[in-house]
Amino acid sequence: METIITKNLTKKYGGLIAVNGINLTVNEGEIFGLLGPNGAGKTTTLMMLSSLLKPTSGTASINGFDVLTQAARVRESIGMVFQDPSSDPVLTAYENLKLHALLYDVPMNAIYL
Image (cartoon, rainbow, N blue to C red; front, side):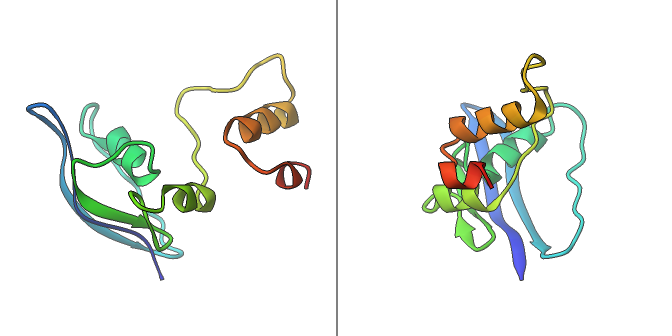
């Protein structure tokens, strides 16, 4: 099964092309790395793939869900760890997870499993 598919995925900011027509397929079970120097468009690509940023053009699907038309399904099917710390050092690990679950509208019955 194809887990990630992009076709001509592009993001422009005015005259700046941040991501230029990425075409890739990542199959279930594959390990895939997105490497490049600062400013190469890695974060922009991940933001589009997680449906947090809309592409200027092209398409992408994650786990069979379109990032534009099925954003909620995309977000339900993935997990993402941000580069910068987003936890509160005063809270326990469980409390931090619970806080983020609440911020991202995870159903209460799923938080207490």
